[in-house]
Amino acid sequence: LCELSGISNKQIYRKIKQLTGISPVEYIKSIRMKKAAMLLQQKKFTIAEVMYMVGFSNHSYFSKCFQAEFGKTPRQYLNEDL
Image (cartoon, rainbow, N blue to C red; front, side, top):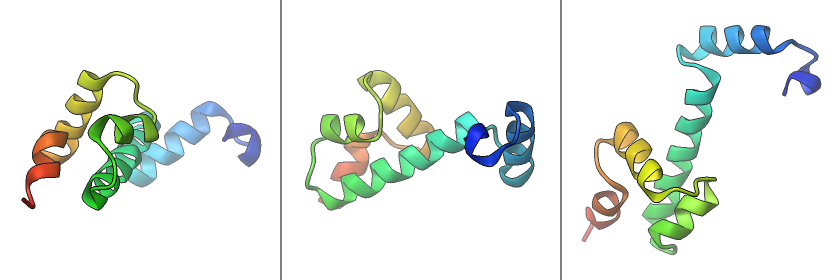
């Protein structure tokens, strides 16, 4: 990202923090969680498949991040429409 934009790491960090109010790492994690929620809503994939699709390899960490973002576990989110 820094190479593409021609801006240093620190400037990118500051700019993203200024625009979003959260760190770049948290911002990217938030995007990944929203993508995971969208994939779970489609009901085409298992939780494990979604977890790998959005770049997580540890199920408990994925579940923890998902719950922090949406207030429910991936399983609860998947089953809420049933």
